[in-house]
Length: 301
Ligand SMILES: Cc1cc2nc3c(=O)[nH]c(=O)nc-3n(C[C@H](O)[C@H](O)[C@H](O)COP(=O)(O)OP(=O)(O)OC[C@H]3O[C@@H](n4cnc5c(N)ncnc54)[C@H](O)[C@@H]3O)c2cc1C
Image (cartoon, rainbow, N blue to C red; front, side, top):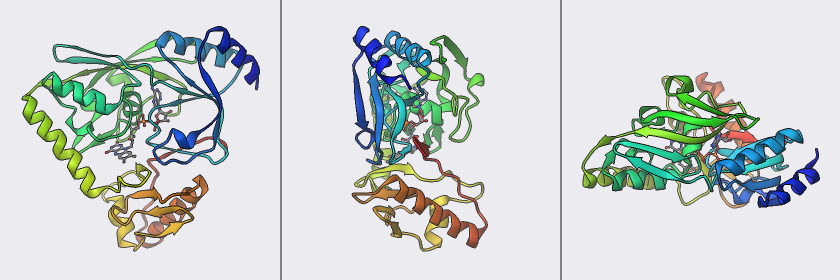
């Protein structure tokens, strides 16, 4: 890997980067070894330079949102981690919002509410970015991104812009066309409907307080550990198998919500992976159900 050459060129473009950055500082699990290099793209133009340099020097890259659905290896991430925090414009024109991929769902939901636009209430409290939410087709309380998104723009590994219609994105349960590709979502367009500002706020507050009541928000986690298996609820299966409170190292099945694996303080990635395996083996043996992780493993094996 030609990391030094890449750093020289980033210096030339005056693009800021950090070497050997602990990913535990950038994930809601607070777990993960070092990224070789972390770069924060401040604009789409800067992002294009970064990708073309990574491609020129054959350096792998990973796109980071808020790190709220990833489990990063204790051995860290090879190559470049690119944060889109700086791609954060929100523009509203009548019932349509165009949003930079790095915008947090919280900021987006508050902007929609302020403009009396309804449709995003479900997303208030999901701790991700708009890009991460589209990639995952995030959803809650009967809503999901597919119900509001109408189009998006992404960059390929050469920095070419590609437009996606809703149909092109193949949004399904926690999946999209972007998964396992090196496409980078840069902007997302959503169409909402006009509503009553106070009612929109009440719905957002209601969803938020339901989260606070049911979810172990006082501990680091990556949300629901597993996808919902057809015909079942992962949390209920885990609870029925008496796995609440079971731990491996610092990773524990939450006492409050069995669907969450939490970091009780010093969990490693391997602790979480071992606990996931233990849960999976137990549920498979007793119920014949294969639990598929929703959390995405990232980094060196
Ligand atoms: C307490 C808690 C509650 C949660 N509740 C919910 C919930 O109710 N519903 C739900 O669906 N999820 C939930 N989640 C999971 C998570 O917040 C969502 O999946 C969220 O959409 C992930 O966004 P992110 O920006 O953090 O993505 P990250 O975790 O940073 O990344 C996830 C994946 O998306 C990719 N990605 C991110 N941005 C881009 C981009 N711009 N272009 C291309 N790829 C990109 C990454 O490379 C990675 O593969 C919860 C998590 C926590 C910690």
